Amino acid sequence: MHRHLYPFERFPRNPILTREDIPYPCNAVFNAAACRYEGQYVLLLRVEDLKGHSHFTLARSMDGIHFEVDPEPWITPATDPPFEIYERYGVEDPRITRIGDDYYITYTAYGPHGPRVAIGVTRDFRGFKRICLATEVDNKDAVLFPEKIDGRYVLINRPGGMGGTRGSIWISYSPDLIYWGRSRVLFSPGPGWGNHKLGASTPPVKTDEGWLVLYHGIRETAGGRLYRIGVMLLDLKNPELIVGVCPHFIFGPEEPYERTGDVPNVVFPCGWVAEPDGTVKVYYGAADTCIGLAEAHLADLISACRREG
Image 1 (cartoon, rainbow, N blue to C red):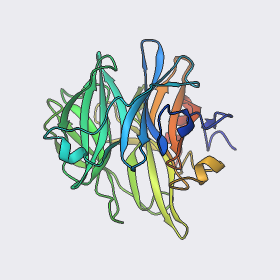
Image 2: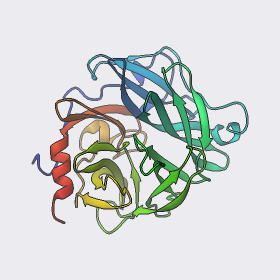
Image 3: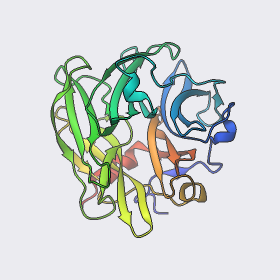
Image 4: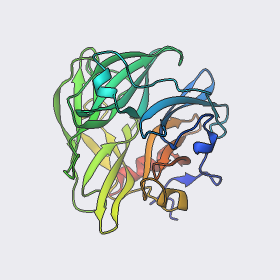
């Protein structure tokens, strides 16, 4: 592999988590949010139960590789209004963004009316408080920026893209994390590797060059959908402005555990952790069945965004 084209290096003993690592019966574990908390790596795992509904379970590690999974779920679908009906079929695909001392969790609430973006918060990874349902139906892939911009919270999300329709990445703003507006399209699918729909994958990381964001692109092929990963840079002061985007995908399904599973040909990051040495650990769902780990240098990801194309 050419590092300047494909900067991620897989952990050689992937996958790092499978359903065999979950201490209770389940179908699969995948699409985990990630952060650092009190000197540990924390993963918020999406676990699919035997009924096909998802919940979130915590896992912790000192080295970011070997994780101990909690004995029971942490966040399960709400049982009280107004969230119950929108989470009745599960909670999915979390992302974690730290703002100050709080860790905000964006996730997909899935119920009879379709998927919605929900936001909750924790300070200690014990208590959890739901804040809002931030969008209307048919919306997912939401990530929060780690600081306010021009006095407002900023959210990237993906309305639409259900039932075979195309889906674009949008950006929205809020004064209070509850009421969201001034929404506009940020990035749309085009011919090529992400021709069907796009969605944000990881919360933005602030760099001197701009906000660095991984996103996924889906291509419709004769053999089905193919999920791969791209990278973009957004302007620090005006995140609606894309200042760089890699013209090709930088990470795609290649290994057997990424090619074969409940949903084949999928790599789907929901979390990454930037390290002091300039590298980043990316945790990704593989074939909607297990979790893999890959590492890259932030400088290489930024360079990929600056590549002409």
